[in-house]
Image (cartoon, rainbow, N blue to C red; front, side, top):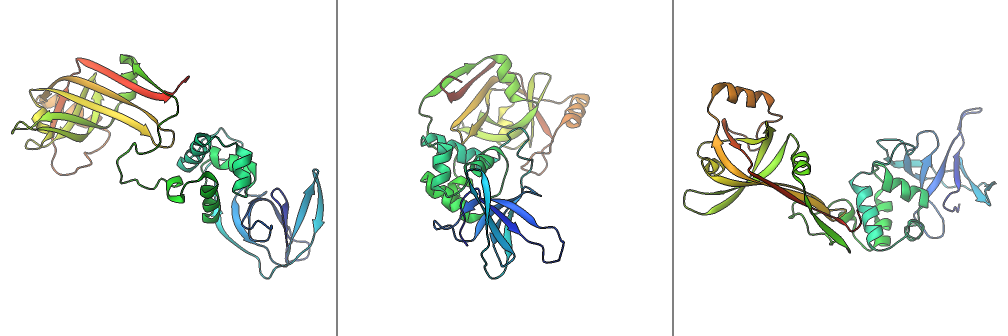
Length: 306
């Protein structure tokens, strides 16, 4: 059996009068078109790795008209399902894999069809991978990584334990200042940020903390003897940022202002009631520290023209 991208694979029902199954061949594993194939089934829109058996045949598409060829292989086995979170007709919502694939393809100046040809998959399937959350087979990932001149681990987000920002810089970056309103919006209502303090021995320290934004103050919980507690009764810097490794862009917001401990019981209860999460560090962290920003600045890196 030999097939081309876009051909239709049909699996006949083993019972007389039973329903048959068909799907588009969207990925080849061998240059000569021999099995197995990545098939996107018409009834479920899932992509599976298929080893066609004697109940399978291929409709070859020629100028848009199908022609049928019957060939056999022992056994018909499906494996490695690829399930999309949303249908391909919905608004594009790529997962991390699709974002990395699309960003790497554009960074190398490759078109969709050229990349698909190099990876021996259909352009429509590659577009699907870039636009929808998906989980392609490992064989498809290997071919795609080879076509893009990268590694499978890079496409899958390998190096999660490494410091962020080790990816390639944009060819034409644009660094712009953010206004106070946009900074407040990026701070959102809660998250994880870093507070810069001077410790008791005079050394500087930067500590990550879970924070809340309540009544325009940045508040976080800590323990009285912790490093973060050194912020109390001093002017501190508090920073929040986000980096998109796939697209090599991101933003940062810096708040500067005096920090104080919250002691009024009603205020403490209100903060605890509005907290979105417990401190990730765990343990007894019941001392609330409030930072009232006197300065709020930020920057964003994007491709030029955005």
